[in-house]
Image (tube, rainbow, N blue to C red; front, side, top):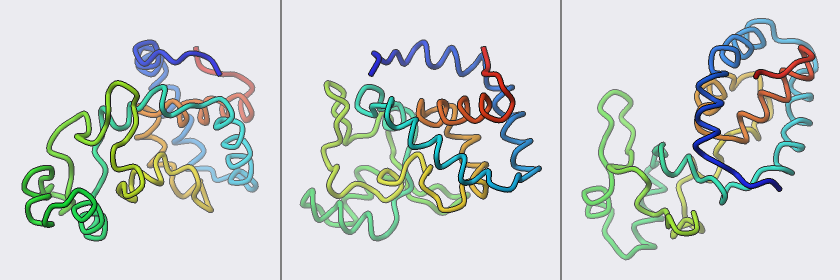
Length: 171
């Protein structure tokens, strides 16, 4: 696996964002038969060359949504009441009514090794990120459009799909 450089990933993403969005919008609009299976096959290949611990950009720049069950489980794990846990670490997003991290990077991320201190009890949103493992990936293109900017695995998946379906990759 090659060394990961977050700065160069961000530069590459800014350069390719328009092409990726156009591509994702096209496949979302024209749902080709068999495309879900192709996406799942490409996803398997992407994870052979992706090391989340080399990046942790999701933990550094995004916040998971904390469900009621997440708050119960994590607060118990860290020895706090649910109320104190919410008060110390979370805020309620008024628009979506979601509990989110107050700070970034995530308070549970160890920046020395990019490991999560609550990995065993992490929020469901973290455990399923970047959400590639959906049964029908085409129904989640809107999620790919967001995550492609933060997650090198999603970036690679979209890039591989572009090559497979259009014969060329972005710059």
